[in-house]
Image (cartoon, rainbow, N blue to C red; front, top):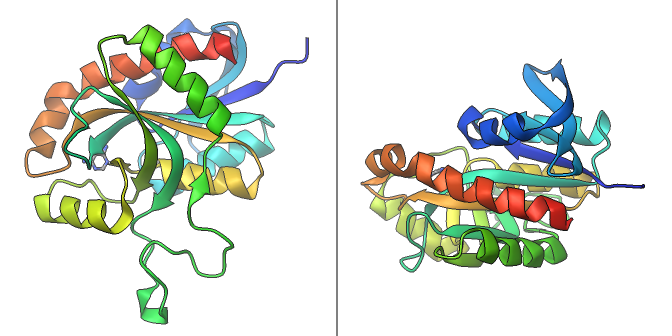
Length: 234
Ligand code: ADE
């Protein structure tokens, strides 16, 4: 059977550990200091990898998935800080698009977030996949709310109320994290569809570091349940 190969990236080990454990017939290869585990996950041909934190790690990882593993699709799973008062800790956000909030060429007259000399700076996610993920989430996490919209990324852990408000106002993101936008840009350059799935671990304000520690594990459980429901649907 001609099956799609799915690349799955989590920035931190905790975000992918449960997926790695579920893989069968797996083979591990190391590249750029990252372990790529190829095998069968929930009946799908998959490559699961911990990229490390931040946009550069994430982009390098996505490029390897495209070049070496020739994936047909990339899913980025993990946790994020909420930028929207409606979105609570534990809720899930599914990307419809991503943008990098720390891209700043305003000195050249560009708007914040705009990448000079590229035809877009807002990378559309695979909307068919986003709809399937929302459906899977409703089944896997019936007590949790699911939001779909823009996710913003940057090489910054946001833990300041004023910064959070500025990001929310300037970029209209639902949540903030540190990899999705870079994976999206790499996927776009390689013409590979992608999706970012994040569970909220904190409110990206002055309480962020504390609540991140408390709620990280719970938020990750929600994404793992979602992923294991979603994969057989693909
Ligand atoms: N990932 C989880 N919470 C975050 C935050 N507040 N800022 C950036 N990335 C995050």
